[in-house]
Amino acid sequence: MVSFWVLYTPLGALIGFPVTLITRRIDFLWRLGMWGARGGVWFSGVRTRRAGWDEMDPAQAYIFMSNHVSNLDPPVVVPLLKRQMSVLVKKELFRIPILSTAMRMAYLVPVDRRNRDAAIESVKQGVAVLRAGHSMLVYPEGTRSRDGKLLPFKKGPFHMAMESGVPIVPITMIDTYEAWPKGSWTVHPQTVTAKLHPPVDPKDYRDREALMRAVYDAINSGLPERYRGGSNVRAR
Figure 1 (cartoon, one colour):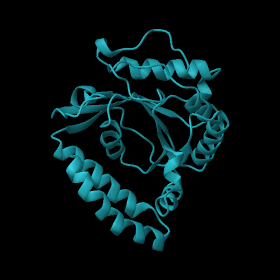
Figure 2 (cartoon, rainbow, N blue to C red):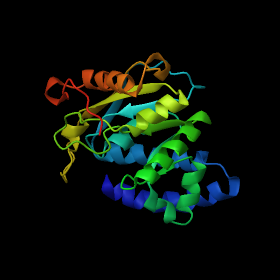
Figure 3 (cartoon, one colour):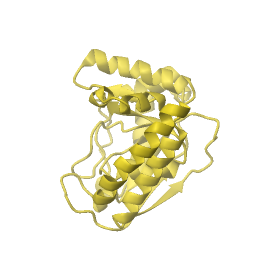
């Protein structure tokens, strides 16, 4: 898997970046990225499937919120969602020439969790991206779980949802922890599942905490019993 990505990434960049800069469109580069993600996962021996709610409105922007237990999570779930979307990216990557231009064209949002003011600015940028009609993938735990259990959520993603009014689609990643847990150098071939739950509309909730509770419960409900988080959500 890693060997494939090491070979594919520079080749894809060599082809994709010039096309993107000439056309000023991100579509071709995005497709290259999705082919690369699927190819790397396939070479690892991991097979993927999507389960649950599939009646997504193609004209509607969504905030996809998922548990995060493995480095396999993004390359598994993003191709399965079959739509271009924004993600939160470490601000340091925006200092790389050409790459930064492509990321801005793809409406990716820089984030610096060590700086409170910068984190607030990231939320504002995220709201603007969502209001412009672009979907976004967010990991509300903010980091990968070391034991596969659902961690407390951060507040930022729910500020974005309340401010933008964009529906949240909770996603439960199942068996990616068994396939490639945090801290391991070994990928174990198996079938992993991205389970989508019905959308959660922020307008239906009185405050951020109630919305957070609903999303947490939805993601938690799809996990095997041994990986479920506590009954009380604690924002971090």
